[in-house]
Length: 253
Image (cartoon, helix red, strand yellow):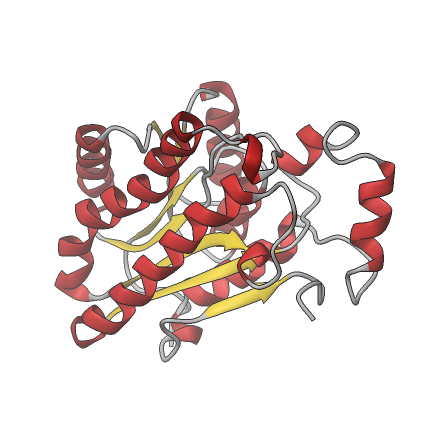
């Protein structure tokens, strides 16, 4: 069995943090990759160069998940370049502050829900008819906060709860068409937004507490996330759907 079906993987948010590791893990296994970036075109182009060096075709396109028409346009370009897309991987999320619920305004909550929750639905809406044609999979990065809620993380956890519910619905309804949908609940991963907030929202006391409350007594790596995502997108997980894998070092225990 080939590790992946024919075609490419589309990695939303593949230009930074964990997304880069996902793209590289896919490419190292011979899977062509289309990736998106929000603002950092230079970083996205650098990722494509690394993927070309691994011997695969790669493409980077700008995308704002708040723009439905842009999702449709970019997906059409990806299909034109690669023919078939066998996996849609959602590795993007809002750059949000850490705030207690009492301090979150309705306007801020609405903004994040539109970008993350509604954006995920718009992504599925634009891509599901194509995945139905020959089967395929969705994989989304969510949060271990769904299993063990961390204070001040509502703006991350609540939208991801919506994403997980959406994917379970897709798994239940679309399995008959060969479409799978799974998620990976992340604990503390030393990449992306964690590195940006380290030393500010995540001070030394927070870091020490997080390690104590994690069974493995360490934080995760982007490459470890990538391995889980690649597995769920691959043919090795062809009988896995509607599942949420906790990749948290035992934080939710």
